[in-house]
Length: 393
Image 1 (tube, rainbow, N blue to C red):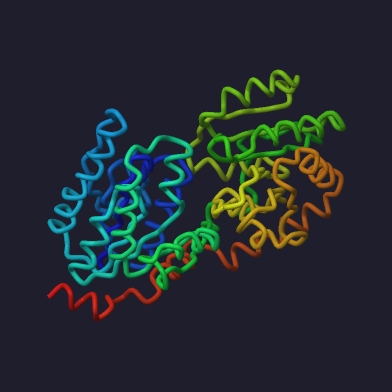
Image 2 (image 1 turned 90 degrees about the vertical axis):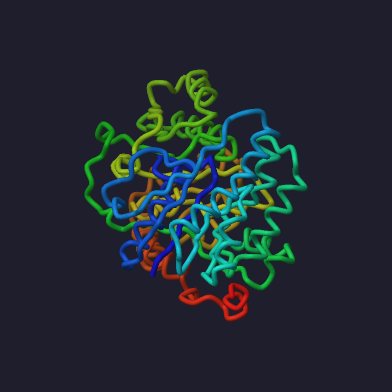
């Protein structure tokens, strides 16, 4: 099987350190393990491929210049022609797999025109995200792009049930949406790894891994840790990652007198993340309140695979993933007191930590490896539907 993996999103460096980058890399590895020939079409490569991905043929797409927003939107839209030309030049393909991006429709329309199976992975409501966190000038054009892309796809993959419901609200997507959540590589998170930043004996380390962004609730975490540390000074906070909230969070840590009890590492290479998780006694995902929480949080899967007891916000997919009381402790979002209390319970109860850790790791290794994820992604797409194949005649 020949597969074209398309990522036309300039915000996703496919060989970078971001969570979205890791998702791309893990899917590529699992595809290669199945003996599939993979061509990667990406507008932002983000460095050299890891050794495990050297077999991927990288086809760099032209970068969209960082001009004013309106100009950038027009150029991103025009780039569809170059993407289609690149697919035709390097094809044919049996499957075209695209990580959905805001202005891209050419990959799915190419798949439909050539009779290939077109799989569209949708991780977020991109139009709403762009308006909320960045800037969107031509919303109507973005909506037309989304409808074209959804209509052309053979199958649409949502990373969570809330995301699937959003997709099903689009007439162009209805009836072709499946949920395939994130996964883990069990070889990366094997037991017994040497900690990257070991704590002094008897010190309990509370950790977070990920981009330091507003919706991750890091201020809630710092307040919760401050309360925990006031009860027991033999505690440490370890924040692994970088992002727009870093300066504010480091200032809050200093203002609360926690500078000697906290470590903020900045960005680290993906290969190093397991050793940083091995430096923690409990891991936290304190997402802020969001009625439309649609994430499939990669960090939580990795926490669980690393055998860490998890404290997370009671939101969306996390409720099912955590199996409250069995795999993790869940708290009301934005409730620093509840997070502090849960961490204090874990601090005092090593048997509870061991039980949560064991059950969580068993769950993700049983249900959520990347090999399993890719098997679900490829279900039923070995051949294109007859109606679509007929259109290519």
